[in-house]
Image (cartoon, rainbow over all chains, first blue to last red; front, top):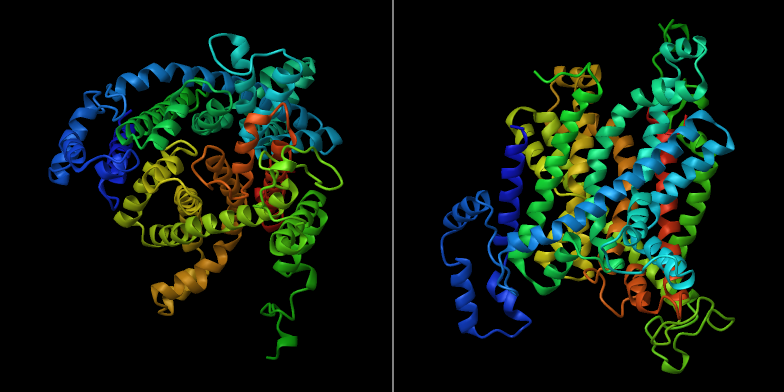
Length: 299
Length: 300
């Protein structure tokens, strides 16, 4: 827990510096396209506190961020925290569903490849894994939309609210991230399957299913948990594109819209929150090691 | 004592059997990997197409012809036409140029600073190492494409900015890999020997350490090229990278989104192009990894 605090502080500082150290005046940049008058620019500068020295701005930003105040959106004038918290559940729901899809597909492909090592099944599984990782999310999303929504009318094309709305986005996003899980499951399974306790389990007369699922997979899954933490970051990034393709609400869509509107406080807040969630998930992953593998203890 | 009489002759280029010379071993291993060879062949075609696009393209990729709008693939327009009647095949060929350029520039922007930072951190150690690696940890705390997105937010949408953004977002992975390799190489006897004979630090780093960490950096750069192309096209798809009417693959897909039912060919061709290019680079990267260091093998 303590190690993630410096990272979070660092991320906050990095986001602050990125937004303030770049050439150009943020207030002018924000109002450039709407053709804001010099008065409105001055007003915005005051509102954002841009006339203060940088360290004062930084101190204020940090103090407010700790209290959960990330400023107000330029366009809607609503608190950034409130806007983000409205969108966050949609994104978390999508990322969690996609992670489930990724784990199911990735584990199945990995086990199938490991059990049929150096056969056509192995080659096929590895090829599917690499192809899944190479497919742009926006393209596979559009292909599914065309097939299941436009042609077959099985699933709704856009919107959210029900499980039916979630199937396509979660599959697209999950498939993209299942590749690395599949490859890792395959290599760790191969390693575990050659261990002596697997031979013991087999010689006890256990069924192959029990040997694979209870004895091998349980041990092969430990490194996979690390990758799941990293993959969560990938999924969180992937929601940006997925939400746009399927016209879903969420944090990713919010970031893109905020960038296009030049709503800097909103971009800053959303990016900061995504990084915080990512750091938190990786912390959970670290903690879950000890639960999954009793050999690991944090003293 | 002459060379011939030595019991343990010093290995030289002439005394090492041909089958053990590292570059030849790598080449031979790579030649056995059919997937990597096919990928290399496809990439060679993509590179050739991007160089000779002006000669190969049957139409001007930007020429608007409203009478020909949304034409399905035919003998006249091999991949059909888009909303503005532009020939998709010609746009695809010119798009290869943009995608490769974006990928290569982004990899250069990521690898050069990443390499230098990794060398400095790994070789110096102490507080320099801690400082550099903590900054890299902070950059890595931004999930996936979000760091690139935030940089685009600051620099403004556009292809050059997308390249810079994707490049910067790639720096931490190089720094990590290079640092790790330097730490491992630094303890080797030949580095200690170089230090013992009084070599300067920069000479040790560039002459002795750098050539020995080349393999992991090359593998990373290859896989990073795929990542950069994918992310840059994602940015273009979101309207934050290449701007219309540039024939960038991601931007072409975005333009075709609204006509998915009426004209699916607008999105099919660029999507397939991105996938095959990225897949080929990934397969080549995996092949290179297996060939350069069998211990890193993914496909045992």
